[in-house]
Image 1 (cartoon, one colour):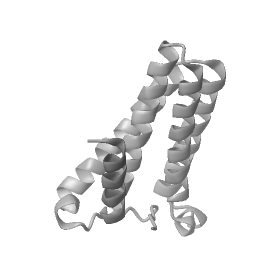
Image 2 (cartoon, helix red, strand yellow):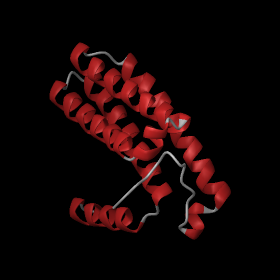
Image 3 (cartoon, helix red, strand yellow):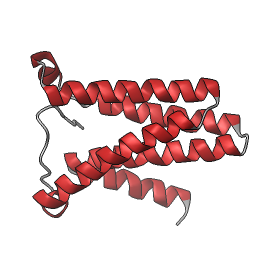
Image 4 (cartoon, helix red, strand yellow):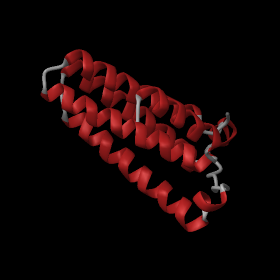
Length: 144
């Protein structure tokens, strides 16, 4: 598949995905870019490493922005814990980028991987992929 067709397919997939599937896609993208950053770091491609980490950081910020502000304002424990985890992950990636370290990237891959697995289980158990109506945590809102 050529790059143009793949990009177009990806755009259609994003536009037609339900909220839960969008969250899963964000986690998958962040993990993919972090793995790419590790590979680039091992190959001494600092520009590639930096670009991949910035993309992963952008995705983590999107996950942070997707949290429901009202839930955060009410002190909803799930929303607050996710916010803390996302901000911690973001800081670890900044640290990895500046210090040229792989360990913080691997740590965040582990954290995002656990969240990805949880969301995939939620979608599967609730039939979110089949019905297009994934349940949303009260602390999460995806718009678009």
